[in-house]
Amino acid sequence: MSTLSNKRIIVGITGGIAAYKSAEIVRRLQDRGSKVQVVMTPSAEEFIRPLTLQALSGYPVHADLLDPEAEAGMGHIELARWADLLLIAPATADFIASMVHGRGNSLLSAIYLATSGMVAVAPAMNQGMWSHPATSDNMQTLRQRQVMIFGPDNGIQACGDIGEGRMQQPDVIAEQVANCFETGQLSGKKVVITAGPTREAIDPVRYISNHSSGKMGYAMATAAIEAGAQVTIISGPVALAAPDRCTVIRVISAAEMHSSAMAACADADIFIAAAAVADYRPASVAEQKIKKHTDSIELKLEKTPDIVSTVANNVKDIFVVGFAAETQDIETYARDKLQRKKLNAIIANDVSRIDVGFNSDNNEAWWITSNTSQVFSKRSKTQLARDIIDILSKQIDS
Ligand code: PMT
View 1 (cartoon, protein in one colour):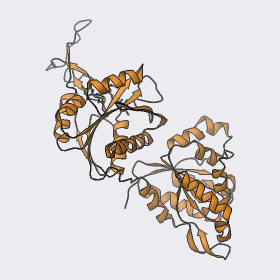
View 2 (view 1 turned 60 degrees about the vertical axis):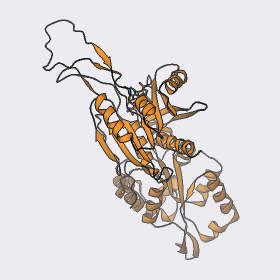
View 3 (view 1 turned 180 degrees about the vertical axis):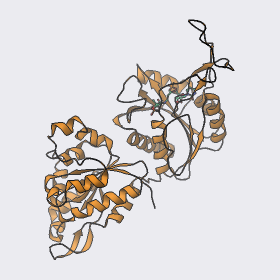
View 4 (view 1 turned 120 degrees about the vertical axis):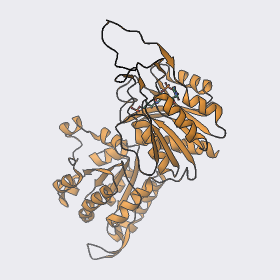
């Protein structure tokens, strides 16, 4: 069974009789490990009560685009950014038409317009409505926009007609959602990823470190796994659960991360250095806790080994991607690191902002190679990682 571990899915419910099956869809998606939030159109509430979906999803159900209280909490833009995938099930003929026309007149349609995540629809309607040329044209438009279409099934309908237009069964829809995350772009490749901070001991109780949470590196690992790669994460101390289906090597210091990375990269195809490795460490570590007898102390610091540069300069036939954590002149400094460390590509991000970079769930980044630069506007780290893996795999294939 394909997993949806750590995935964030919005189930959008529109007003059709198949809406009763949406509760079961929420359950099947959760069974595979995803978090699910529900957004309903006003007419969907005529078919299934929001309370049922709130109880099942564990989140308040979102319905009103103009509710000031809801917008002050998780508004339509936040919800759009939160979702890795927006699944509209059931999707009525009317809602599909509103997607085609880009109408933002309901919370669900506004989320559809605002999301950079994947979008899927599970149409459900009368067979005559499904086979109408207007619906066929609309489906064609959605396909061209990379919206995934699940079903519909053929069979007996609520109105008594027999034909195509029944929404697919919840377990079939959940399986297809899980398959959306499996791209196979890196199948057969070995990928090593560093993530999180390192800690450089001063004495047995104190250390030098930084604000890295590991979220970006772990998102890169998840996206690489979805792309079919065999992934090893070399992780500094973080409070994150490891993704399924990968090897995790836990380290504390830059020296440990360095030796683990060198060993793991020996037969790897791709190295992605997302860790915020401490650049300096105390030249010597006090054996006992340093006493506070004086008003100040001096620490002599020495440089840590540059892991990404060592891999790029010493390991043969490996594609090396660094990250650049910058606070000013982002592209210029990142390009300098790309050249100095002899990397194939670098992902630059702004770590002076609180809404992206360190510890945030979102990030904004520049993908930079010797002759290209591409900006990825603010989005979830999960989505950004997927976009980066996409561009990286195309680069490797070219
Ligand atoms: O972990 P999060 O909270 O999600 O935050 C994500 C992040 C901001 C940490 C991440 O997106 C990021 O920018 N990681 C790189 C942080 C960093 O150390 O950047 P840098 O510009 O100082 O280093 C450039 C590159 O050299 C990086 O790939 C770094 O991993 C590598 N490096 C640095 C020092 C060193 N001794 N060895 C290295 O390999």
